[in-house]
Image 1 (cartoon, rainbow, N blue to C red):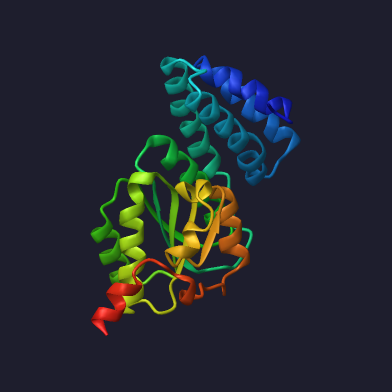
Image 2: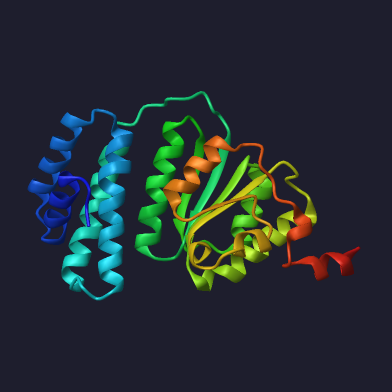
Length: 233
């Protein structure tokens, strides 16, 4: 399951709730990999994916799962304080997550990577109402609006937010990015709803946001929201 022995050890300590040993594993990895971004990408993310995969297949008891997710979030928070800025990319980002704690944790790791690359990120977490996301986007005019790890139940809200922002034209230069969750499971969905960028998971999406600042969707490919726009015209 793991390519890194540190990740395997971390997984074992997390599901047993061994806080002291978990911190020792992270410290050992940091000795071999001084860049804290490597700790996030090579240690925390594969461990997170393993925990979620086993949880979804009912191979971890709830107590072990809660031990793991709570402790991993603490470790991710601590690692974030070590991340320095490695780029002068000063674009602004509003990032929101899916409704569950795991969605939020995955998004948090992506947000940390974006901050490390110099971007100015606002991250309220998950469970934010669509109208609030749209209103804040109109008010603050970020360069990027990112939806991380959205659940199927979030899809109508994400669609509505993208449709509204495109329709009113309040943020004409806004880049909209979606990744993970339902967008990983349904091919072509992100393009259909008019997103500019998409990826299979939050970390991949963070990389695409950094590397493709000029990418925008061809809205002629969009199948959601067209009829409403024609009526409005």
